[in-house]
Length: 462
Image (cartoon, rainbow, N blue to C red; front, side, top):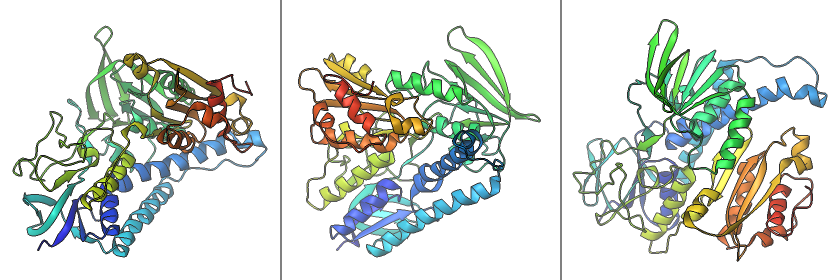
């Protein structure tokens, strides 16, 4: 008789959601986590603390740059970094304690320590072996190192260190113009840093719709961020003046340098599998170090599954959560399912960017006939009242059937509005279905309806 029906290794968004769903389905469940708190990278040093700082810095910016325009007069607030860090910490604690409560509510055993697969149906945690009918690997990811740059979490920091800086750097270099780099770069730009973003490629946010990329770069440039594209960073060496960064411009191999106070290395993440005993257990990996899984998240070893960042696909907390629920249902004998064509992505800058489904570039590569419906927030009354009308909604639909294939939003509340399109796509809706759905006025969501209308006879307010 196994000690557990399921042992989940890792208590990040994928792992803890998987464990809770397993328990809800009547499976005796344990979750292994070596951190002092549950929630993984996302809740502790990722999604949640970064959103707290984004929110605080946005309000600080509004108070300094927008309040007077609205007739809100008075002295602008000053910045207390220690108190802001305290606010961030309390936000994290509230969420991690919430997960601990959910574990107790659902009678999930928290096996405190670092887990290792010790054989079929066996997980070793700090020297103690636990038996399980099924094992789910949800170990997440870690920062990808950059050759020539050594992270010390003081002046050369990863996203973890960037969330805990004791003071606002006067000069900040961000290596990598992906989601993490742009979000944290925008935080410090709003708080007074001179931010320079160094990106190896010739565009920011690789993989996103090109029109959105260009619009976002333009908006962030207006906010004071400087972009150097096609820059291959060679080194980042701390000295008495801060950090000396050297890089080559790929277009002509010319060398350049930059002196800053802090460098943020935001060059992506890689699967975290250290100490899990995957090779000893015979678990197959991809060339990129990801755990190979089939369409039901099963590894090549019977009874062992894997989900989230440690497997192929986008490294997104909500993707991991969906997989966690699906695996739990699969183990329980149900039919777990994840629609990978309808997984939204959000960049929490200001303006926000949100996308789901195909881009114009992927549709062209497929040779698929499509049509575009666009609507600018300049035609939306609510967005204009926010002073946030520089953006648009773009819906891509099949040219013949009108079925929605993807959507891209840059503007206020984009991360909330994208889910209307996600639901529509999940049900196989046409752009006309969204266009014929009444939207409350005045809301920013009206821009989504207008973009849907633009896929047909045309938008109304432009």
